[in-house]
Amino acid sequence: MNRILCSTLLVAAAALAGCDQSDHNLTAEGPYDPQANAANAAAPVALPPSIAHSKIYRCKDNSVVYIDWLSDEKSANFRPEKNSTPVHMVAPEAGQKMVAADGHSLTGTAADASVTLERPGKGAQVCKA
Image (spheres, one colour):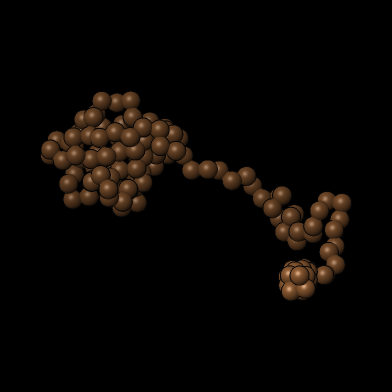
């Protein structure tokens, strides 16, 4: 019985020794945050557009391409193969030609039965959904 009591006291002492004994400066608003003003003054964060439609197209050269149309209606992700890295294309306004930095471009919308895809080294071609 003495052993159990001693071991229980040792465990309790060890648990209490781990407690933080320092003073905490709490205000009515909660703990002090030195960057609270900067966070409150920051502009709201805009989330990236989500995928609205994913379509598979067969192009004039008999290749198959994958296009993910994004919900902002002025951008899309193009993939030449199913599991390849997407090429992000953006248009200045909805309905206009979408362009990527590497030379890819896309004309059309998710509602269209066919789109015009231009790839570097392959030129422009019509692709049908």
